[in-house]
Length: 232
Image 1 (tube, rainbow, N blue to C red):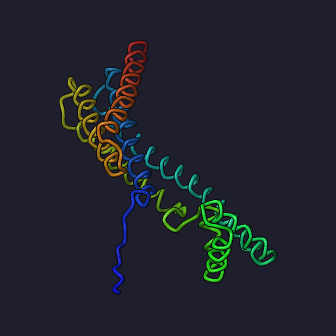
Image 2 (cartoon, rainbow, N blue to C red):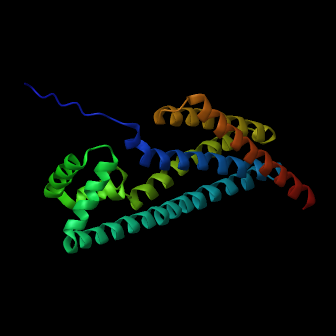
Image 3 (tube, one colour):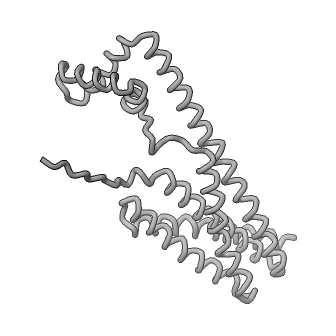
């Protein structure tokens, strides 16, 4: 009998990088486009609009990187602490840990004897790996990677923010607001649909929700810019 290898690709394997990439790109487009629209609504010149956009790009990219790094580092610290505790428990109380693993498999539907056999074989193979996966829920594809998340967020934010900035630099100032807003919303809709499709969700749902919230963000920022510009 010939055993055929059939590796499967699941959408959960994409969740780490997909989350960081989508969040970075969307935030880059929304925040920069909103900033450009808000400053332009204050009836200032193109130089001030672009300066505000560039400053927003740099600050946003660094903020995304720092935020992701701190957040994912906290997750990583928690995982490491849990693994260290599990290592100590395996050394000090191997019988209790074996019973704990047996109980996990019994709750998944195995009869007690078979669950004990599975627990013994997994413990003999790699006890820490078995408890990390079955008890703590830590598996290789979900292990926290702070630097990877930070770089991905900063890079995608910068790429997203560059789009409305380029549009703002090229279009005439009198039509800057509607064109930047329209171009950004179209791009956000496409990204939302692609992200939803990659994650296995309906593309239209992903596009509609990101366009709705982005429209609201730009409208509010434009209103503030108009109000402040008129007052000042």
